[in-house]
Each structure stands twice: as C-alpha cells, then as structure tokens.
Image (tube, rainbow, N blue to C red):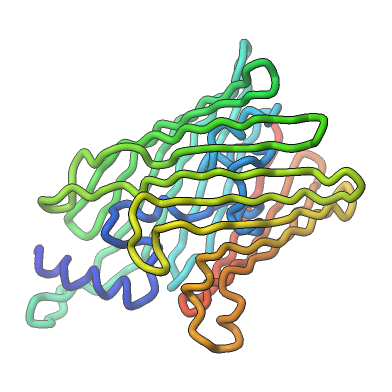
Length: 311
C-alpha cells in the first residue's frame, strides 16, 4: 500500500495540484475560499471582515457586527472541488464567535499497483474545522484567534493536526485605515500519513486596508511570508494587492494581483495573466453574492462563488 501512495503523490504534482501537496503537509490551508478575498488577490489581513476573513486574520472578524451565515464554493485547479461553510454570531457580552468548516475533494482517482495493474479507485480529500473568537480593546485595537482541527486522507492513509491562527488589527478611524498582523497554522501533526510527521504551512502576514476619502474605493495590500520555501510556486515571500470600487449601493467591482503569479507564467498569452484576479459583489437586502476569477497561469484558472446572509 505504501508503494501505491508514493507512486500516486508525484502524479498530483504533475497534474497541477502544486498548491495542495508539497514537502509541507496540509497545504490546502493556503487556499483562498471567499469570493471577495479571492478577487482582491488575497490582500485581506486588514479587511473590514466577516467570517470569510478568518483564513487571513481572525482579528478582522471583530469589525463585523451581525450574525451571518456564509457558504463558498470553488471550482479549483485540475477539476478539484472545494467549499467553505461558516457561521458567526455576536455574543451577549463582548466579542464575536464563529464556527467554520472547509473541505477539498480531489475527485475519484485510479488506484494502481507497483506493476501498473488496475486496483480500482479512491477519493482523497482534506478537511479543516475551526472555532474562532474576536473582540476589540478600547475600540482601536482588534484581536482574534482560531483553533482548528485538520485532516487529510489518501486512500487508506490519513493524517491529523491541530493548529492555531492569531492576529491583531489597529483601526484608525480618522484616516479610515486598518493595519493588520497575523500568524497562521501554528501547530503540530498529531498523526502522520506513514512515519514522518508533516509540518504545517506556517505563515506570517502584514497588511493594510484603506477607504479613500474622495473616491468610493477601498485599497488593500499584504506581505506574506511562509516559514518554508518549497519552490517558486509554493512558500517563501510574496505580496498581494487589491481594490474594491463601490458602483452603487448594490454593486461592487473588485480587482487584485498576487506576485506568486510570476512563477506560474510559461510564456503563452493567456498565462501572462497569472496572478491577476477580478470579481464583483451584489448586495440584495440581507444577502451578498460574491464572485471571483483567478488566473494561475500554467496551472489553470479558478472560480470562486460566495453567498453570505445576515441573520
């Protein structure tokens, strides 16, 4: 069985799942789920957030006032399907509590023996379940933390981990500016796939979000540093930037870029868009619909759909 799993892993990389498997384990934690965040290139560590922002900085949740239910679906690379479900509520005293679940389904894949014989099929997948809490100190300082259980499964093998995210946001109302800092995926593997415990994709983020004074535009930027450098595509340091333009009370247009796209360009015209993203938001009373398109060059494109409802 070990030989079959080992033979299978390189095929994932060759088919474009570079963002899901690497020397680090549980690399699906790098994925951007929310439609708004994806359209902004992932520059979201200082956003006026909701439950979508937990994957970037749990402190941003403190800037949200309402009970909210969020569902996201991603048509990801190489026909991978992914989703996110979250619920947040303001507690009677202080702070906001949120519960989230994210999954990745790689589809049905062939199981092959050492000699290449057909041994049927299997469906690998990933799951992360988190509980978050966020609050503010003297109005300007917001803080938050997330504890999450993580599980990955490949055929008969599985791995489990526990991780912590933590962050802070400094809010400057007079300048309509947020400055955010966060650490992600600080934790350890509880049970490895085979013998060696996989390391989590530990990351550090710093960013800003600013409402322009004389234009209905919010600009944002992040610098992200991963503790491990896996390749030009995975790990290391990169930046992300984005903007959200309010067309009306009902329509928002968004655009973004992340510098990881530089490693995903292979020279063709279409692949020159690698790293670029764009999308829109539609406000329909208590419902917000977000869509984002992201180009990953040689790896393909992603489509992100999010529906959030204020309760």
